[in-house]
Length: 232
Image (tube, rainbow, N blue to C red; front, side):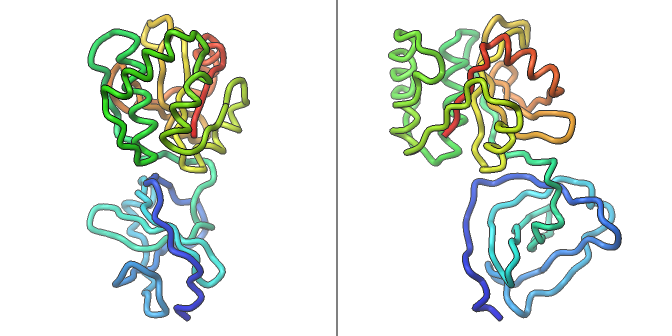
């Protein structure tokens, strides 16, 4: 049965929640890093069924997709079919901007985005690239060369609808949004990291924390930022 494992993929870490389904939720407990025929079926404890599960690996086994999770001392494999489609949050550590200056806001936002792609660009190199971009007055799309050079891809999300932002999050890619009026600031950058039915999650360089915002308020602040957004 082990030969039915088609692929085992490390992934940018993200959080999921379990669907509300009849009966018991369960996972496969595996001794090693792969699912095998010996993996045991274990009930998910009732007290954590509504919590967020951190996913760090994806596997294909017996014609199904499985997510490897950790939760405290527990670890195992959850079947994708038991995961909510209406919730996803990427594991992106928040970075607080060093000063109130726009360049430090931009530096923090870009650092969060690029680190998720495994980039090793130094703070000084990034600051220099931002200063060059600022002189062009081209909007977020003007950062394309920088993002492509570091991640080998680019995704222009200017003026897309929120569902397209959701799809990018489901691809495990955070998004930089330009917003206006958030934190009483005329303009700033935030890093969108997740969504559920009613809220969006984002890292705010101004506070240095993971924050949440309603869909309507996100639309309003993003509109004040001229609907600019970019990812990789």
